[in-house]
Image (cartoon, rainbow, N blue to C red; front, top):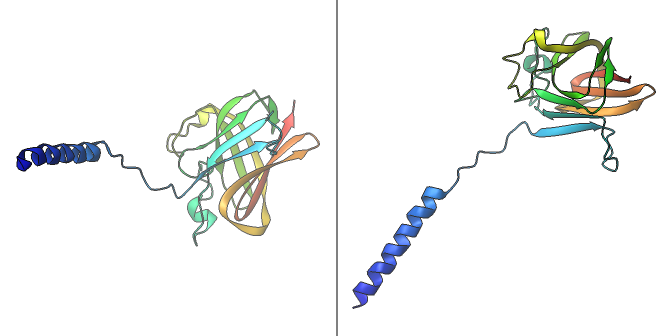
Length: 182
């Protein structure tokens, strides 16, 4: 009699274990280039943002910036997906007026200057499908030396007299991109 009551219980436990294992999820490891956001204004106390950049933060890990973002080649401006910049109002970038909207943010690193590009293609992985025909604005900005080297690629904004300045820094390199109010 005990065998009959034990058998259904063991069968039930066995079925539950199989069901649990079948439904278990395999989650990937954490991304080594974590996603981040930079906004202008940067204060969390100000909800009315004018600019937001979503990007992934690659680390140097003993490598050089020029190894990870080679000079004279289009770079996704971070890791993984191309960085995306959302303008919540129109700005002048270089000599171009850029309407409010979301754009991919590409750069072309150089030894003395970088070209910063806003492109209408969005949801782009890397720079593999970059199409210069879809560039909305381009600006060349000089390279400056960082006060302290940055291990992780970083973006930060500051207010200027005419709008905002987006600073991109990595290793010993810093570039500054002006966004002027229209």
